[in-house]
Image (cartoon, rainbow, N blue to C red):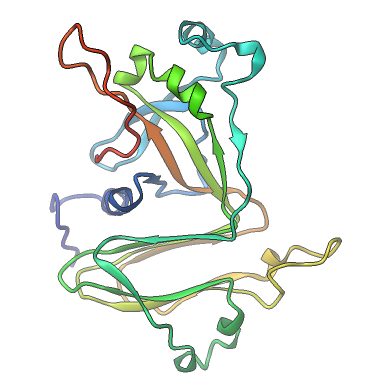
Length: 255
């Protein structure tokens, strides 16, 4: 039986989002195959924690707002930039700890010795824990200068803007129950992680493995950076009085 620490009737995705947001200041996407593009904006569904997009700063309808924010459209300063690829990204909620991986106990999974990502975690009994893993993540983001200008728009006192999105070819999500399970997750592959130029991408032969017995698991593995499991939002608080200026940019608010 599911037992949430907050809001007993909470959706599973809301709980996962809540736990990872509290840890990272970024919002996990419960449905990574569905892209949440940089520059899109909307409102958070309080029941599920999902962002409901209602527009994009890159649409023709938004051009007047860009001009009002002092952005030079012709310069492209508001367009997203792509950051260098990282080997991996791993995070888990505060009530989860990583423990020693006992490779010897996984004799039926010989590929685990050379797994691109692997680990064993323990969830504190009586609580719900979350783990998010990504292989070869790449971040697209709006520059800080452009974000600062966009933050002056009154629109983003009521809407939230996607300022960063993380893409990857392989992800794994795990949301536990309250039994205090310990579990292992690994990204297995028979090919080397770094392939010589001109050879087939090693991700073709990769797959996720886990020994979880309870909870919910979601994962995907492809050759392209087609999943977007994590994104960051801009939300500017209303000023407390008419003379006050909007409060500083907030990107990691709780739901």
